[in-house]
Length: 103
Image 1 (cartoon, rainbow, N blue to C red):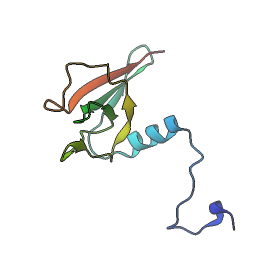
Image 2: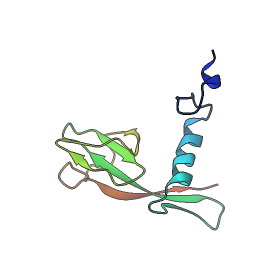
Image 3: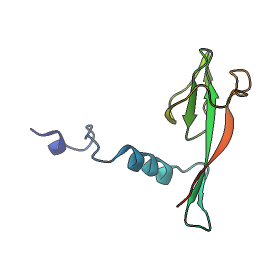
Image 4: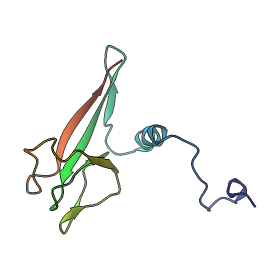
């Protein structure tokens, strides 16, 4: 039996790209409206960054919650270069950022 043939309630592999999956999460989000359009046809998104105790910095769709020395991964997008945002520390994390996508 193919995975695509499984009945509802079972995991079906996604055929979407990572970008499409992120856009789907944005579209399904019933919380805060964290994106909008720019006049030049681009897009602006409000995201969150947080640095953990190990000095690694991550990007999130929604404000992450601290769990001991790390942040939850529920809305994690991914790790970003730890040399970026040197002013962001574990103590002052998380912080809201805006991502502007221009055409």
